Length: 67
Image (tube, rainbow, N blue to C red; front, side, top):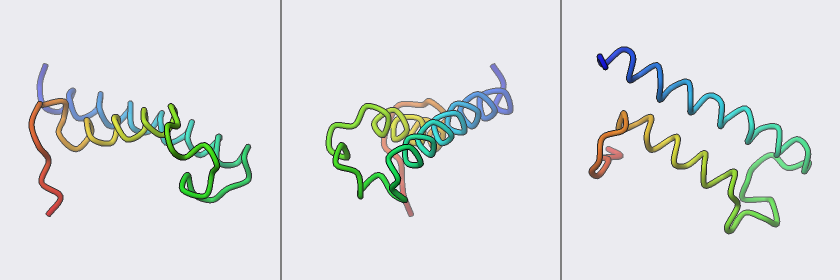
């Protein structure tokens, strides 16, 4: 797979998780996951965090430099 396709794949997955997370926040009437009572251990948030990490690393293993 080429780099552009990889980028599109991970960006698309992240975009989908963002939409789902925002719908959940609207349903629960919160503006942030940290304001939700289900914050710790939330499956949706965990999936979003994973998608965000994969988007930043483009699916490659290893650490991510946040600088």
